[in-house]
Length: 158
Length: 145
Image (cartoon, rainbow over all chains, first blue to last red; front, side, top):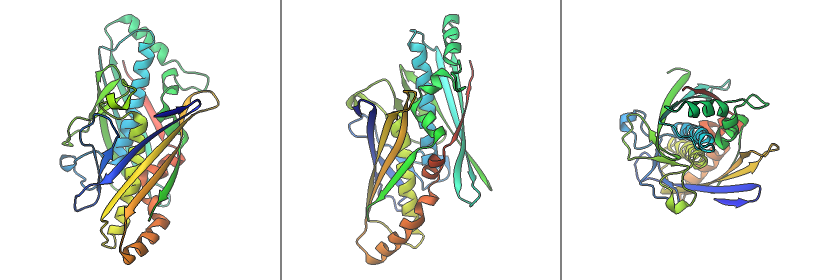
């Protein structure tokens, strides 16, 4: 990631896999220690899929970001969770023109605390700011951007 | 399914700020979301911004490929990149402002090129992710402890 004072840039890539369907892509995550990562738009049954489809990938981006923001908020006061699970459900629906669109993402975060002081801090992290959005959500880059909308500029080099 | 479809994913804390992804029955090697390490060489998985970028990029690439396949054209190769630009908003919070996508299909057949030129006009409409992101997506949060 390149940080230029008030701007950060990050890059990822994909490459077409050799499958006959041409609907499976291999992720390029640069020098990260990641085993093969595929995005699979070929198979529809989970048991057949070699990797997530783009909707699941988006949901993971939102879920991972919110989870990290919440835990970061706890860590700022040196608290930890004793266990932690979270889940995101993506709902797709057709728009008025008949195209499929992501209508909403429902996120459930379930941390477990044994320390009552950690629970108290968690409640502070949930405290809404002036615009009604909680403190920790404001620090989640992906979720707040997804809510507001993001410009996507496409350059197809034929 | 008719006019609505639902997918579920999950994560579980692995260590510090690293999460293990749960894709249900999808049979894949472990995938982690890593917000613990800052250096790329130390990371054991992408961060959420990179997942978002991969989602948009693969969706657009699949929509384009699908458009060619509708007329039975098969690409020899394709690669693509997504650059995510993150900037501070007026309140000082970091936000994803734009994602710049480059898709490079290898086309050496004039008929396929003709079809690709047709696809260029409408393939983006069939990408669920990029078009939804342009409009904004509702994210509803339930933090339960």
